[in-house]
Amino acid sequence: MARAREEARDSQLVSGREPTSRIIRVSVKTPQDCQEFMLAENSSVHHFKKQISKRLHYDTDRLVLIFTGKILRDQDILSQRGIFDGTTVNLVVRTRLKGTLPGPGTLPGPTDHCTHHSEPSTSESAGMLARLGRLAQSSPELTDFLGQLAQLLTAAPESVVQFLENPVIQGLVNEKPAKARQAPESSRQNPQKPEPTLKALETLQNPARQQELLQANKQDLEALTAVPGGDNAMRPVCSDIQQFMLFTLAPLVASKGQNPASELCKEEANAHSNTDTTITIPTASAPARPLTQKVRAGQATQARSVASNQTHSGCGLRMPDINSGHNLLSQESQQPIGKATLTSQLRPSPSALCKALHVLQQNPALLHQLASGSPLQHHLPLLPILTNPRALQALIQIEKGLQILSKEVPGLGRCLWDPDDTKMIMLTMMMMIRTL
Amino acid sequence: MEPPNLYPVKLYVYDLSKGLARRLSPIMLERERQRHRQREKQAPCREPDAGLDPGTPGSRPGPKAGKQLEGIWHTSIVVHKDEFYFGSGGISSCPPGGTLLGPPDSVVDVGSTEVTEELFQEYLSSLGESLFRREAYNIFENNCNTFTNEVAQFLTGRKIPSYITDLPSEILSTPFGQALRPFLDPIQIQPHGGSPIGRPNGQS
Image 1 (cartoon, rainbow over the protein chains, first blue to last red):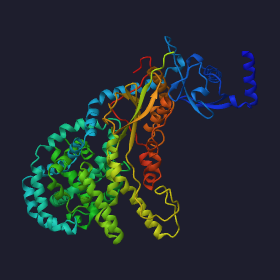
Image 2 (cartoon, rainbow over the protein chains, first blue to last red):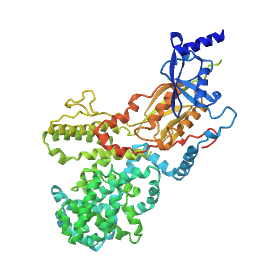
Image 3 (cartoon, helix red, strand yellow):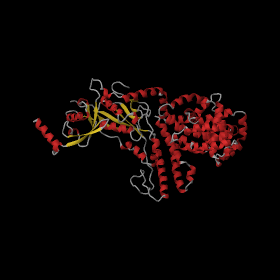
Image 4 (cartoon, rainbow over the protein chains, first blue to last red):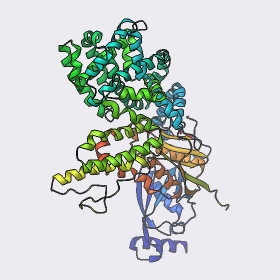
């Protein structure tokens, strides 16, 4: 009787006529691949497993078939469990039967490597991970992080102030109104220049210990960049911040350090251009690239002439003045501390930039003064947007308004707002979030 | 025969952009379309408005909203009281909500499974050696959501919501996404706080 049934089934398998037991195509999906099997829809799971075992060479005892989350028992019939033509079942091959050891072929070399590699890095960077966690989890933390970024903007000029303390700075303060007017920051901002720069200097002298703090924490956050992914996140942020910083130093340095800076500018120009070009994350360097190009162009020009009047001729030369001036002054102020630390400081030092941004956020007036008149005015105000949702909303509305404006008055909108900033901010945010 | 145990399977959904994508995407993607529109005005030849309005290919772009992305989604599967996810460090697990991302932005009920914890670990180990090795991570083609989709189908037969799995194609279908693809492609995402899954025989 059973044999007859079996023969009938076999004949059905061959002819495929009977609707009660069609041949169906079932896909068997393993983690490695997917294979198709043709069998009668009323065959048992046990029969199915035998077919699988024949083709894939696994022991039927080790096969586990799963369909829509249910484990298929040997005595089940395929059609009863809802397996029809074209359905896919999942297969897991047990590496061991209960109570036995796993086979040699199943021991994973790659997984071992994975675990071994992750362990040391995890133990090393545990503290950094905690820090990243704090950064990531709440926006007030993020504000602090960004706030610290701002500190470099004042830390570096602070060293400038320290160096140029008594004789030179007094003279420069007196000269400042005249020189500031000559500085080609922006024609519409010129009258405001002398006072903001004076006030900025006074404000900068207040955070006297920024430099020490910067040095102390720099070690910790340099290690942060060693965290996988951390460096990649830091770099675009820091490169932008560094560019911001350099630009905002333009009013200060250009007016203060023109005379003594110009001599040593030539020497330092190349050194700093190298530092600049090391920042090459493409997404973040979109604004930085034009700056770098201007730097190189301007430095070449400046190398030819010593006169500080070169700073008048435009944005292209302003950068080298800033770079070299900043570079020079920071260097000379740090010579007692150690010149070796300077290049790394000019490099995106996360802690330094953190603090710079922090001070800037604490003193919004300072931010405004430092930024006023420089082409960076577009960038710096955007930084609080990263953390302030109301600012973000306002930005969106402004964007919309400017779009309408640019449609109505072509060419005007572009002057007021750089559309690339918004993208850059978003990408910067994504980069930072990516460090999670 | 006793009925087998059923274990609930949940999908934890996180927005990596923390709301920024929802706010900024209409602007950023719309802006590209504006430029595109201006280009169209200058050049009389008509280009299909690729991706931003697939409903009316080839038509002149009228006043429409820019593409809206609700979020940049990262997902993980929670089953057997553990959260499993895939990142640039391979398949990892942690207590539910235990990554540095914190609690999920939303939880989707995927269904129930009979798959036991032991069987699931075997399955994950097998996946971790094949399709979801740590080197195989790619932010567009083989990311955390690919993994959760795969696992959800294994555990319950159901897929995860399409708005999550459609995200890469949504982004890449815009000029913005296409332009940035070479920069976005190497991005590796690995939420911290979990540990890599191991073999049942004791490897950590």
